[in-house]
Image (tube, rainbow, N blue to C red; front, side):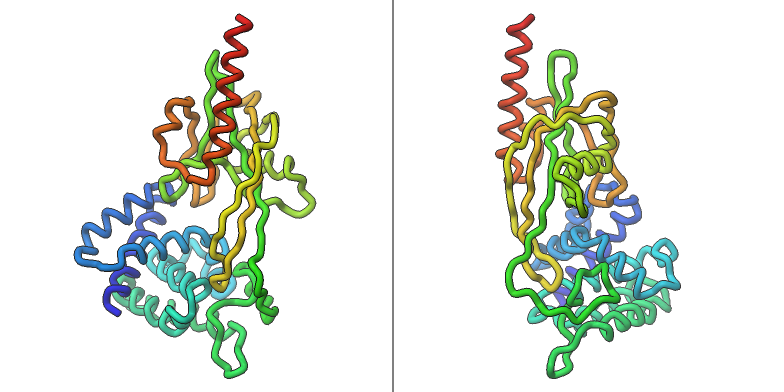
Length: 315
């Protein structure tokens, strides 16, 4: 359908621009600009955001599949157009609802994008990579490929595992990091690809405690080596789409953390992190934030406000 093809074109152009600026530009602003310039009359603008957000959320896994499916082509050697067409096509091939986007439709749409925006050989290249992945996807009884790999996307060689019917869970850890600045306090937040300010967060690796994972993630995402964990703030959870459009319950444990020693912060290398910055408590109120972070943020502000009062009382 023409409207969806136009939406895919705008999504691919937006991903291309974001890639061109090394994943540091405001992705939401890029999408809005492209919608205004190329999407006049587009009825399903939400589909553009759905596609781009899906690619961004699964970017490491998608890149891994590309690298394993085309080992003779390192990611940096694939043209920027081709790699973003592949990313978009793979997102639909691996994660979209098969009843809405059959595998062959996902592949054909990606090939058309490659032909329209790439070089003379782009369509053939994209067809070759996506076709190779499609052939490796597990089969149903009537020999039709299912819409996704049975395993995690990064494990391209392993396949054929039984589908899990229940919602799986992922444990993550997050830090609300503050620093003492003279008599005031500030909180460190990171700006994600969609323009929301949020806390440093990540998965718990094998054999790590929550505290060890938290320290590692804070170092990786905002560059702080020395921290002091003050207390656990609580748990929050949300549902996200994983591979095969299966829902995954993300369970996040938030901690209150004080930065000690070096307190200058730098954003990590992840494409999902645009910048990192210290904010005063009044400044935070005006920021664009996720609703599920609100409780831990309020608990932190209450703690820090009380700390300021105690400091003043002791002067």
